[in-house]
Amino acid sequence: MNISFWEYDSCFDNVDVVIVGAGIVGLSTAINLKLRSPRLKVLVLERGVLPSGASTKNAGFACFGSPTELMDDLDTHTESDMVALVQRRWKGLQLLRSTLGDANLDYTDHGGYELFDNEAEYEKCLDRLEKINGLLADVFGAKDVFSNADDRIDSLGFKNTKHLIYNKLEGQLHAGKMMSSLLQKAVGLGVIIINGINVKDIISESKNKVRLRFDNELEFVVKKVLVATNGFAKKIMPGLEVMPARSQVMVTTPLENLSVKGSFHFDKGYYYFRNIGNRILLGGGRNFDMQNEFTDEFAVTERIQKRLEEFLSTVILPGKKYSIERRWSGIMGVGPEKSTIIKEVEPSVFCAVRMGGMGVAIGSLVAAEAAEMLING
Image (cartoon, rainbow, N blue to C red; front, side, top):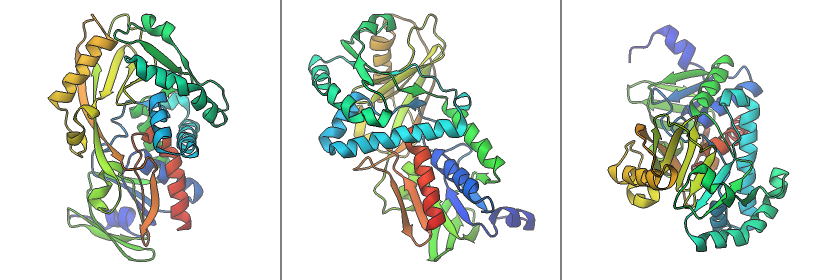
């Protein structure tokens, strides 16, 4: 690779920490490191022109779990584990907001809703709603966060919807502005960021000596490495229990007289939608083709896109004309457990992955913990 002395000296020589992945966790970890130890030379490497996973491809939900998602967590986890999961998400969201400021996030608090088209499913959820509210009251410092909102169905214009549950603490943000703000903050602190560079091998040679090799024949040695590539982590660390999971998204052109405001969940969170001004963003549906959506390939598929459009036309915008302006997909990192993986994998080689589709919520907290680990490890 044709690299000058100046380029090597300023970017690759005597690097204290290399962070692989310039998403929420990667940039936030770099920021934390520089705030705690300004003299550290921190280098962030990103294989894409933009963050490659889900950080700029998500729906911009500032959420911590819909009622049926939390019910599922209660069925598969202990009560204390479920509360701990929500606490981490809530704490992470507050940390993100305090770090960047609501204006830089374009944060709004219209609240969140879960839709039900099945009476039995709703009754099952309603029976446990008081318990969920009670378990989480201390986390939020608020009572009755979730409540019935059937009286809003007609004003929102929904069809084929029997019940609504309202979440008064859920918000939404602009994922692009969030990442731009993180990028500006990182650069302002002296973090070096290089895009379009793909890490091929990470070789731990000894404590504080890690060799990095790249597709372009470049290689150099650094003191510590953090892998923060989430759904793509297995490409570099095959032994990690994290799988890529694709989520497909679409957004409409502007709509006249749109009454929908807020963030909405359906079918245990597998479908989600929100307004962006007077547009509708809709995503999910991967449970309709789960096997093929466990992939790290960016694509939109006819099968799921048709499913999403059917939901859009029969539930969200019944009888209204609309057109789709853009379709895309993002890659999440999931696993057999909903907990994140933040650990030292080999001497001086660390990871912070498996956000489970909650990267916006927990990314800032995971980054703070990763920075602590890097400094003390």
